Figure (cartoon, each protein chain N blue to C red):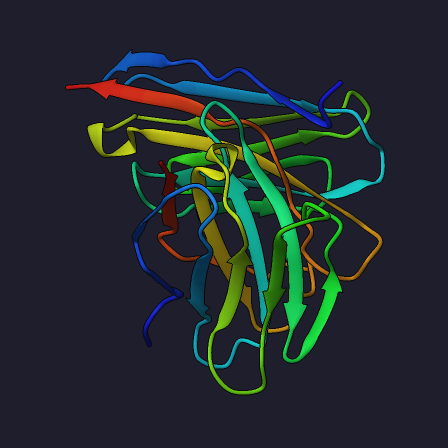
Length: 113
Length: 116
């Protein structure tokens, strides 16, 4: 079983739609939760970061974490063609004191104008 | 402030040759991470280094792979006697302190290694 499970998609939505991206993780030791966005032939860039259950909002993006069910979500409101990219969920354990990040495989999103 | 710089962007090697991938972290960052992204797989952690020290190399294959981050100069990921299975995108990331508390990892654009 993978430590982080993520549907690779691809996911295709019309411009303006609400996008829901999800991941599950298996290890309770993971305490930090992130979403990265990766454009083609580029490195990932951090979108959202949280370490507690609940919601965190930043503009059109909302990250949601449910530690009891080990479920991570990213919602994108009013999706734009520029949001077309691969979205990677990521987790970090509490111990270790450094960012040993475990990534999901990534969901490829296409927003159609 | 320049971002994380990786070079070369593309590297072609024949089986059995050596590959050297370079990473210059962001200014002021002394923590470097290397990740590998294989086709149809996610990003996988390889190694975490601080200046002159390897802190965690648990993701590195036991043979042919090595990494260093000298006091001066870029971090180097070295792959000896490359095989076709080494073909992948290799990403470097840096951070100022390494702490996973509300701190970004900054990624470079990667080196695409192709082994013929």
